[in-house]
Amino acid sequence: MSASPYQGLQDFVAGFPEFVQPLLVAAIGMIPYVEGEGSAALGILVGINPLVAAIAGAAGNILSVVLVVVFGARARDAVVARRGRKAEPVRVGAGSGGDPADSAGAAEPVGAADPADPAEKPSRTAKGRRRLSAWLVRFGVPGASLIAPLALPTQLTAAFFVASGVRKGWVILWQVVAIVLWTGLVAAAALGLVTVLGWA
Image 1 (tube, rainbow, N blue to C red):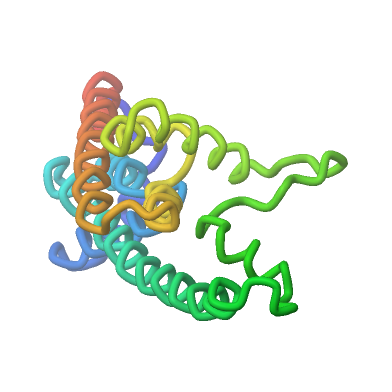
Image 2 (spheres, rainbow, N blue to C red):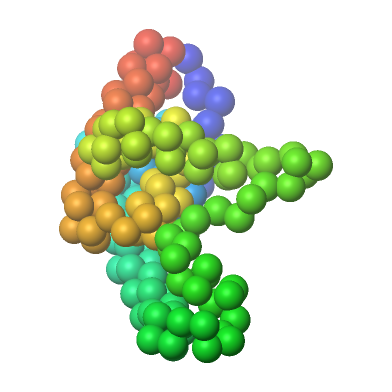
């Protein structure tokens, strides 16, 4: 059995009580771009039981997504209600001299991106949102959710779906499916790596 390059980290994690170790994995799983799969793989590499690490990582990731969906949906509802109140005078009194920007803003879907400045290089997140938008149109929420981790973290994906008007329950369901699938695949790969290299 070869020595693990993560021996120091393994010793550090081993210093915590066993019931705390999965909580650490879950907390790391709430971090965007690390998420359930990253935290589960890290947990396995530092010697936590693979099944425990996978469940804890997925649980932390799912909790963060549920929080994003709940608070994101509330924010969207507030924006829609505010825009509805702004647009009301324009609809009732056409030609009353209201600000055209109000009526234009009311028609704009919540979460729509502003036109990009051609001179400005799009960020990684902006590129991911464009990909996700195309996948959402092409594959619907189920398909887009399953492949979205290739473009954006699940937290940002969930926020995008909610802002686009997708029902909360539907977003949560398919994000949970995606998190479980990706965490399971990456955890299995990490376990295979640890086994093959003899780091267990």
